[in-house]
Image 1 (cartoon, rainbow, N blue to C red):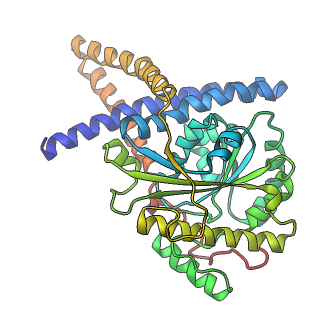
Image 2 (image 1 turned 90 degrees about the vertical axis):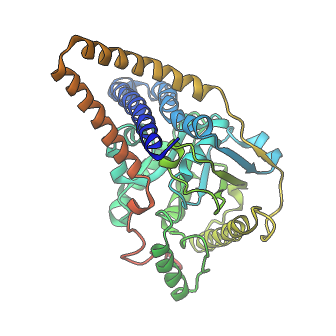
Length: 390
């Protein structure tokens, strides 16, 4: 297959997946909005249960892309006893690295296997909530959106967490304490900040911002019994880990280390919590350095070795995606063929223009995941992870 064939094949895949994902996402968003302004007003529990499946139907398309289309295998290292006993059975605060464009989607593979994909929440920048499909689904699904300016965020921070803690079903809440995605520029600023403030200088992470972590704990301690230390790695020799490369079916070797930390092990005072978080990131940094250097989380780190296993491919993401493909692409293909046969060139060109707009819009959504599109948070104003206050 020459480069021209690859180019055309890529555009077809982009267009097909983009049409299915965007159309199904918008339809799901419409249903979510209707239920949010009706059922949610008098029965939040019922709304949340229905919304779990709506979110799953949307989010699992990304899992399908990773596991079925791109063929990614995720090797997980975790204490098997903890995985069997706790994962998917308790409310959790996940603290994860934010290194790659697709680390969140690899994390979703774990969520899907633990039956938590429809109830995963996150702290995210406020602008994301206005993006159709994923942004709106997160908004009505209980995720917490922040402007990353504490004077503005503190007024909604406590109330948002208080509302989240009323969920009757098990949920996972993701916190990326680095505050933004890792880049070389931000890393240099982070190291300079750490050096000035006597904090650990991390080789593969940004110095964690402690404010969100310490301010969350008083609201979540009674409802969340554990913290999961999650770390995702991709072998440096592999291709760039991006959604575009996943669509091109370029192979990646991914690893995921998970550690369950009982909430009782997290100190009570803010000063001690700050120190605890910095020590956790120092530990994460050592494990990640070991993985990047040797392919093992344990060889060059001090963490306890545990057995690894590949996350299985469950059938439900494939069934869900097949349903949406049939429901969307078959009628659309029939319509295009009918317009072409009818000889109505104007209508046919209009339909093609609409399809092209899908491609452009989907490309913009993919652009939101690119590292180059990440925020400058942490570069222009210093790291902001105060030594004492966070």
